[in-house]
Length: 466
Image 1 (spheres, rainbow, N blue to C red):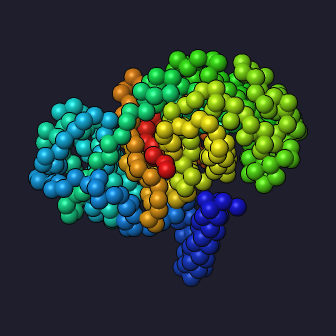
Image 2: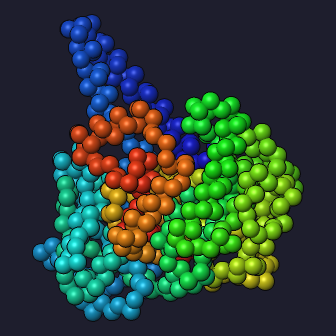
Image 3: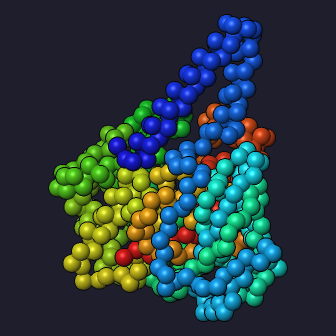
């Protein structure tokens, strides 16, 4: 069981215990006083839970984020004067990533409405949101606001919170990955778009390599009258097609999009027994060729055997053919999804001893251990650094800015992905309505799925890995 699954299991257990205790108290009150009181209060308690306590947050909101950036990257002398961020002597060369550390203390409203920091300049404004009840150090992403900062025109103002102490600023200089040959490793169809559509749509040359068909959890297709196996096969074929077709929207040539067709959530089992074929959990398949049929390239794994050795052979062949200067893959620490963990392990194994080596490895996180809502806030907002409560060697942040047109294109790319199209379950839709009315949260204008809110942003955030 992954750490995220363990945390989620513990969270649900604690929530059930809390609800049972609350129910016991209400029943005691009902017996001792008024019998109708529990009948009135229970629905109100449930509504309050959905509005303010339904987030999966596996750390305290008053914990500091524990980033440990190199002292050499810190810009000295930065101050906050009358709400204006001042960085004397800041020298910009282009393609920098700027992160500013601020201390936040939420007011009472910030325990019920999402607190955040508003970043304002003559070019416009951004609102980067944090946990309700926040009291600690957080990190703002200044992507797109670098010039305003250098010219002293950038203002910071808390919403439902206040800024305390003096800020600290880090500047990370890096080569622009968009001016290089990029290969995005996607464990599933849509991972490349969620993490890196803005990057690969602007790259000089881009390759999209999707490892699995993503055929499981096909209940939506079973509702059409298909059996479990038929639904899984249809979903896998659709997602395989999506992984090859949607990048064309961004101008990626068909011959540079590859679907390897391995089976969803089976990469860990494949890695445990590299020579053994590992079949699909739900599609009753021990052959990947059904999901590889749309590829235009011949690969070593075209014999259909779903094994780790075949996956490595496929990756090595693609790396030698594409010779990418930049590889974009799941972050080995931040992203806990089992297939994502194995995806980056497969890339590293495939690179061992290979005659071609990339100049840059970029990590992304489409899932987090500790906070299911990150990036917090609305579609179109900036992407602040994610919660990291224990200091870890994560690498150097690398942020790319997306203009509004690029964000719309990204939203349309996600909308073409079949896995993000079905309606949410009724309970989730009801929770969204309650949170909109009581907690002030806005729905994404692009679609119901939570990834439209989380992924269509003014930034794409990566980490330069060693």
